[in-house]
Image (tube, rainbow, N blue to C red; front, side):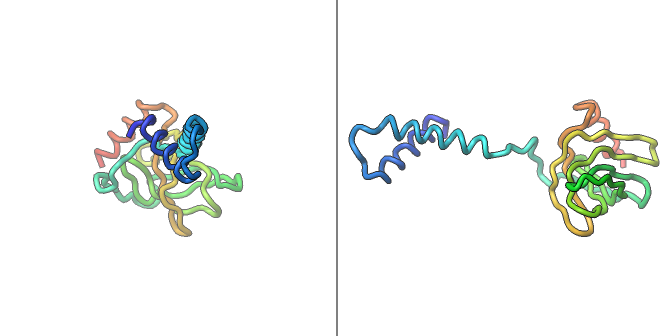
Length: 152
């Protein structure tokens, strides 16, 4: 359903709920438009969609990869990765809630990946799973990550 049809349907519903008065069609149309605009702003689109069944996770030995970032309280953390996939990384949970991930350090390969945006997929007392939505180097850095994960 396109926007016009959504507005028309919502305006009709509002009009009916108000007793179907004569002559107020424009008022209900404008109210419906405003409500749909507010809904669109409130909805945060996912940066990308993926099917977890198609994302193979690879276990990382202790000490081979580390994750750095900050907690919601502003404290820095440095934690070992547990496993990785092309879409994200699971690591040991720091004290406090995650605010962001700054860097992934792959010690074995002497590589660092700068992360600019994540989506927290799951956060428990023992581990955290984040989706890597943006790397600092944009597509080039993401492709390098995917290539290396594919070789594991």
